[in-house]
Amino acid sequence: MHRVVIVGAGFAGLSAARALIGKPVEVTVIDQRNFHTFQPMLYEVATAGLDSGDVAYPIRVIFGKAANVAFRFATVTGVDWERRQVTLEDSDPLPFDSVVVASGATARYFGIPGAAEFSFPLYTLTDARRLRDHVLRRLEDADSNPARATEGPLTFVVVGGGPTGVEVAGALAELLDVAVRHDGFGFDRSTGRIILVDGLDRLLTPFKPSAASYAADTLRGRGVELRLGRMVRAVTGDCVELDDGTRIPTETVVWAGGVTVEGTIAAELGTATGSNGRLTVDADLSLVGHDGAYAIGDAAAVPWGPEPAERDRVCPQLAQVAIQSGAHAAAQILNRVAGRPTEPFRYHDKGIMATIGRRAAVTEFPNGLMVRGTLGWLAWLGLHLVYLIGFRNKIVVLINWSWRYLSWSSGPRVIVSDELQAKSPPEGADQG
Image (spheres, rainbow, N blue to C red):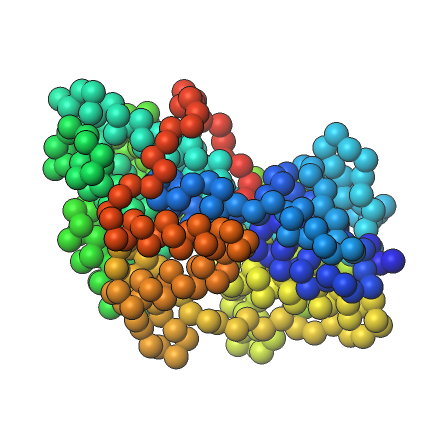
């Protein structure tokens, strides 16, 4: 059989593998984790809204009944293009006839001193659990010593005004409200500060200005301070320094300032790359200069479409792009196996959305229609439930959301591990 190796089990990798189930190919999915992470809801794990198991699902269970799909729990170290093998750490190489690189991305720090060492990215389940434990410890510290609350423990700085930054800031505000109102913490809620910093003069740049204004007004109404048009100059263990000389005492910096492929296995393949290190692909998503190789999802500079005006337009690093590009790459592999010509990729924009917290979200459709407030929030909840993998996870998340909405109770506020004194560099998203 034609052997297909898929590197990474994120949205893109799973989409490609699913499209090949039952087809005349032999598929092996490789990932350094044995579970798929539903990344759009990682911020809920980080802010104690959901448990880590609610947004993760075992890869072997996903493909357990697929006779032609196997999973390999391993770390990819590279690709031997001459021998057509994927090299693995502590394991024999895996031969392929076609290879799909879906290795995701990781946090981008723009060379800012101290950002990688002292901030918390939010791109993997490990990131989310580490941040949750750290935040909960800060609440306990402030409760034990309320006099120190204004010195840093209860000041949370979020860097990045995109959807992730907005979602984290809104969730942290709700967490502080719940901690004081329902959990018996003794510190004054007014001593808790959430500061969102972004170098641009508005939030949610992919959205319409009206959506950005709504998000800004909603965050301010929930006590979040906005420092827009300000760049982070440096991050230390006890403060953030901005480009205007302002120093913000804090022990918690959440980094949502963008992503890059640099630092993942995609950057080690020796192939052409574009902005942020994303792999350069042809119109059919094949890797430039490599027969039978494809790059999809966040790892690739996926073109918007085949038309002349679209060729230089690169798709954003969104779940929908990953899902569609994964299915397209799988279809091209089947075309090649059947002796048919490959077809160019075309992205079908289904809209964008971001939530700011309870009963506050914005959903923007391709036709220009925008829904916000409670209706936008319900749309956000519904869409994420649809794409969440696993029936059990869907039910548990729905129950948790409903219970928290009705009772204003806190989520799984459990510190499950000792806090690391020195954080290691961020891991790759799906593999590497």
